[in-house]
Length: 98
Picture 1 (tube, one colour):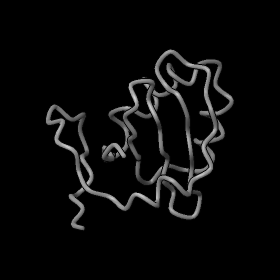
Picture 2 (cartoon, rainbow, N blue to C red):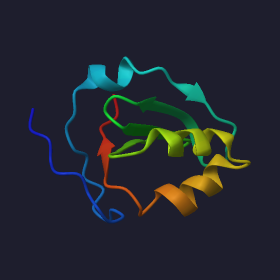
Picture 3 (tube, rainbow, N blue to C red):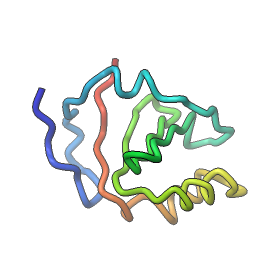
């Protein structure tokens, strides 16, 4: 399955890209109490942040530092942290729904 290059800017094209389904399923997801985000997973070895939004959409963010993941978890509001420190700051890829 061919993957497209990660998007650097916020997507206006909502076309779903391919990925390996087992990758997302094998992650350890943490539920979040947020109006925007449902859950988060992080792969430190690959420096990838995975966010599941309350809409059900899953995005992965590339080159995400482990210390910033800790800051995200410790934030008073993960939704606000996402809007100010993650969105439009990291290359990302929208994953297909399963």
